Length: 100
Image (cartoon, rainbow, N blue to C red):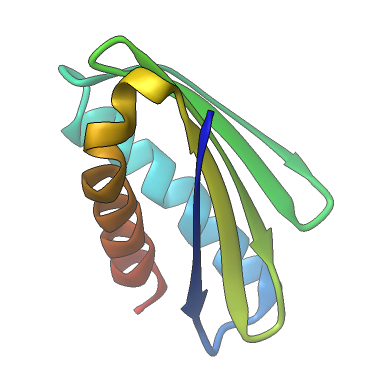
């Protein structure tokens, strides 16, 4: 698995960040239903674990909610390496949009 990492700053309370992340996932399910399958999410403390398939590739990510930023780490299979930067840009963009 090839790794991705990013940090997105925010100025929200933790509960607001959690709500926005949950809403973001609902929006992804609606907007990308033709590309994203088997989207699963699970909160464990302040960390949101998600997994999904995009174009048949299995992708997993952890989003750690901190007081001033979200750190996320994701993994894509070796055969999806060519799409890693696009996946990372898309996730970063969705996170930034959700936290505004």
